[in-house]
Length: 98
Image (tube, rainbow, N blue to C red):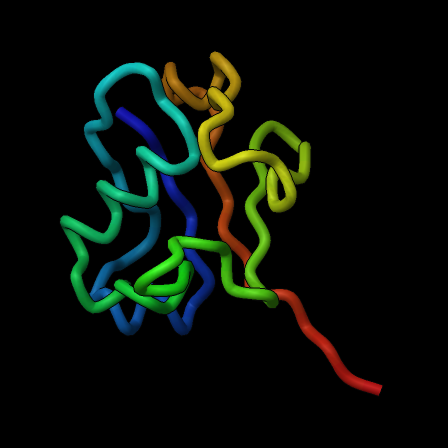
């Protein structure tokens, strides 16, 4: 079971409370997790990734085991602690301004 933590605005959009648990087939990649997240929560389609290209939205970041996976290939396997459910995949909305 993969644990996913979403920012409050995406949890509200998905109508989800707290952590989301997803069943993801092996290999567990960032792309596979996001695919399953969008299948189970269709309201999130297009909010984390572009509808067509499936590229990460510019102000969205992915963290796994204290490592930034935002610029990694979406097909890279996630750490064993994420796969085992010991640690969550964290999806954050970055803040820009100035």
